[in-house]
Picture 1 (cartoon, one colour):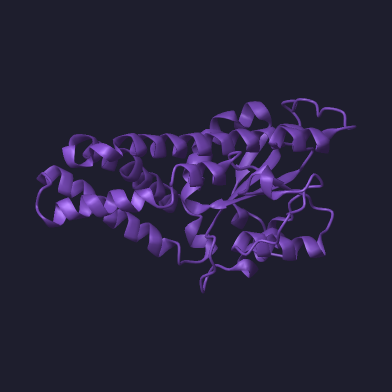
Picture 2 (cartoon, rainbow, N blue to C red):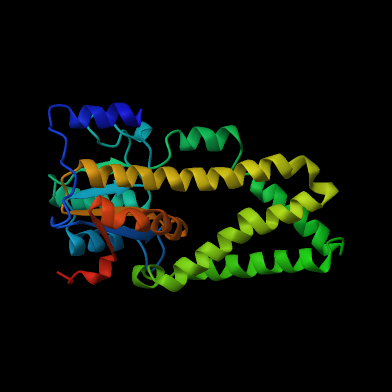
Length: 266
């Protein structure tokens, strides 16, 4: 579906030339967000970020199934990004919006119960922990995972500037490592968790596949869309992964990664 929509958009346009070394690189601004409003991060926060950066293209954490062929949302969204982008585009209607998420994300999530089964895994691990059935090393993994999760959740209640700092990217990377690697090692070692081993592997693989697909789609837009400045709005736990995937390609593909707060407040 994404391929069809992209083809529809670019029909009649000449392919953009490869970025010559001397050309001004596209400024790619990855903004880590929180989806639900908090006191310090809400749709107005998204609106202010967009007003500050003034992008030529906005990429949102959705797949093409949410969009019409004209790249408008089929249904109004309710999250911070949806509302903030809608407000910005009412003032700047010429600025296009495009999807960049893994195609079929929601269907895959529903099919494999990715929103519910991780909770079952944690509940079983916690039961083993409370009954002192885990080894000391396994218990330490669970303790560390909870501590990292609590820390990351506290940052999610902060203002955008705080959330979009390298220390938070590092924290998110460490927390996700514990979720998708360290906890999975405990599950693999416990016979009581045998029924969940395949699910945990699938969940971890999907985390990688989804982020890698996001990065590929972002790179597609930097190559094909003649934009001076692109803003990518993505849940802050993904940002470290996208930066890791995109940075090695920046120089060769003619884009430069920037933070939204590097731009002068308007």
